[in-house]
Image (cartoon, rainbow, N blue to C red):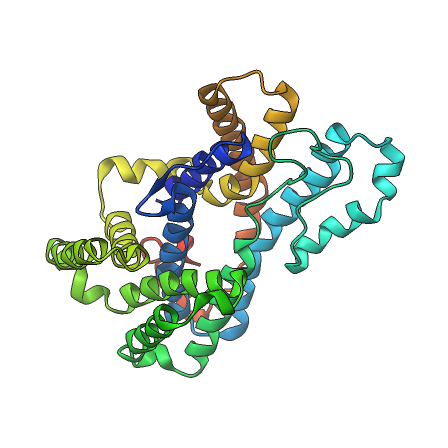
Length: 336
């Protein structure tokens, strides 16, 4: 499901990067839907990780090892491989540029999307990695969950849906034009994360009642769509659908994991790969050719990222004595 979500983002961006309007469903682009799926699944899995091992240091260390090693290599790849190839500046001038050095501020979550002289004459100019802006938002969700866990909110599980419902009421009744774009998205995606967290805490209720839950949420989604409240409809539909399907054990779905978890790699490499392909071909390919080339190249880089960077560093995750003494729970490696 996470790979599907990452590919949705890639597919949607392919339109934007070629200067075309992104297709939308009920007011949301496919890229936005993909990000909502990501946050929903993240809420579910990261809550599982905290409940399984409610230790602040180990929780933070696991999040660090999941995010930063792969991100560091991707940033180096963009700045030290794509940049020197695509820049219009002399190589030494490029390497000495403060803008190039400043690009590494991405590692401390300061958004930098440009490199000096890179991608100046393509339909979506200068932007090198426009997908990374959601990572700080996800980190803020991790921080909120950590605080909630330390306050023992997760020990009294009915508190979590009460908090999420309160935040949703606040979000949907506030004039969102006054809070800023980033704050707006942080709250929006935070609700999807919170819905996913609630689904983990209440998994004993819905796991054996998937059809009943789907019917109830489908009814609520239909009412929201009829009222043209599309964001409410997506909040009702996306987390449940993605998690209920993602946790179902089916022969086809199980086989997707045999190559490793390439979803994060797809997410962080897709945008620069797509821009590089467009720059290198000068707009000579069709949309389908651009999409196929970008998907293939991105999957190769994501595969290498998982096997050479992400999986090895995840082996460094600190574990509690309880987890070392007991067999792993199905899916726990992904969750942690």
